[in-house]
Length: 269
Image (cartoon, rainbow, N blue to C red; front, side, top):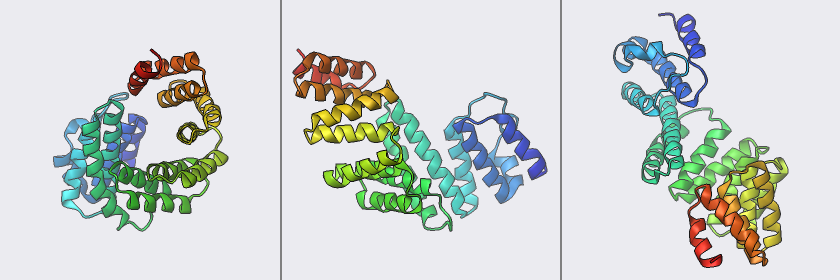
């Protein structure tokens, strides 16, 4: 099989879903290492005849990458496996399977460290991902190091500042967090996460009018942002608009933010 003429048309035919892209990237890496091994052992025949719109589980990509990693010390394999673990973690987090999500995020850590120490060029976004995984694992010094590196490499990306702000907020540095949220919103005033997070910080600082401005804008940008509804509801209750606040708490609960129901019991009944 000719690498250029046969592999790339297959990639084009398979489509652009995240799951398929990750698996195909893994295939390409394996092919680059040793195609005959990949074709005969790592990949069943059906992987080479994937049809349009057919989904492939990310766990299959992990199996392939595990085999490729056992045959090579190429750090790019560690990078691909880390990214796949991260996406599996996100999938499970979104499905409220937090134990599984945490397990996948932990598995990503060793691969992240390995390829970060080995590759000559690493995109700034990888540093952001690494920082977020260290943050999820409560490894704050490493998270800060990678957030700083992402910003150093590309200081114009709003969500880099938002992620560092979240770390600073967790560490109790409200001044530093607010400064980074402001930087994120200056870079992109449509950044819904930075607006919602700054609104939450204003709520924590008891600056409720400022919180309401940010949280209402966040909801305008994303009308299913349940955490924004939650803190908007709490903010309205704090300024004496209980009925409006309780309505927003109810919406947060309906969207899946179940902490809202505990607040409703205390504040609205």
